[in-house]
Length: 93
Image (cartoon, rainbow, N blue to C red; front, top):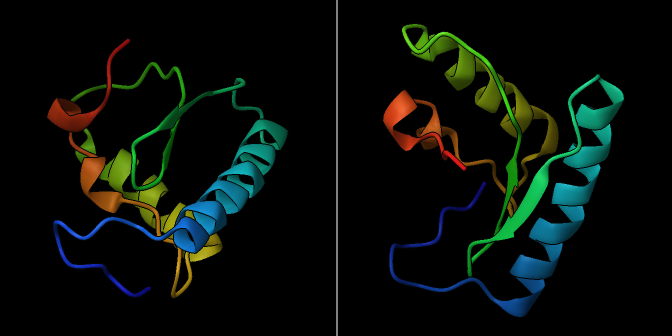
């Protein structure tokens, strides 16, 4: 995956590619038994927000999960942000 420098917004083509990949990932995860997620627009990309009930002391579990998603759905244009694995960075609604 090509990493864009901080402060540089995504292009329309990059954002469109991210949305298409988000739909693929959502279809895959829902097919694996995940509940339907909330889709959020971050400005430069998108988020899939899933309700989970996981222990907060095993940050490796979420990190490995995100890394596997990046392996499956990431490429030189679109990537999964694997830095949001620790409990302090997990979104709460």
